[in-house]
Image (tube, rainbow, N blue to C red; front, side, top):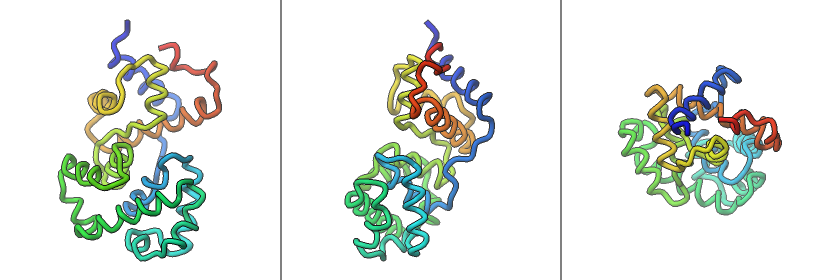
Length: 207
């Protein structure tokens, strides 16, 4: 049986050959934070639509979210689903960050402390927190999401959650760009194969 570390390395090598440099989740830190909540249980295309509406309404910032009326915010993010729950979550997240001195203050936190800070906020789970850390604060944290679990499961990698995260963080260079890039590869592969149900063509199943 091939060790799981070797299978993970094979996945990374395969994705690098397939996709090369891929830019994923561009945007300023405040927009990344907002998007990390909106992307819960929905497709990224819906989040992009919501972010456009928030920008047009002048609400695509932490201060803009906090100052927005509930109705205006719900109207803007309606397309992401669960919009009432997400309105509460994104407002809570934005107000908590601002009350602590904003992003400049949080940048001084160590990565473990920053992760704990976000996980303590209602509605922020590991995937949301790690997305914010990696894409919003440039920390070398590998994001584990549904796509990562699904693809690694197809490769017969049994680890999940924090164990799966530790596996990839141990293989990737200790720099945020590498972690972003690898996560982007998982997203691209999932969009090309998993979402389109092209399982019979999946190259991971043979690992």
